[in-house]
Length: 88
Image (cartoon, rainbow, N blue to C red):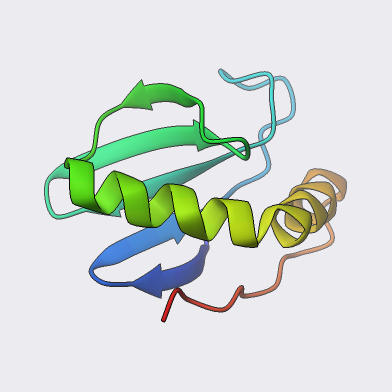
């Protein structure tokens, strides 16, 4: 699963999941031993994050929703992906 962005110890990944477990565009994020699956509106589909990191991830997702959707479309079509700027 490719990493599309990294910031403040949070690694964000996305993969093509045609017919997969989650039937909505989403990302996977890891922070230390915590893992979370979240859609692009901030809804948690699975897992949990510490409060501070969840706020950072939610803010980043809101800033980059269009880019996340574009990556989802590319990955779903098998056309690769692109990196997204980290939160600064």
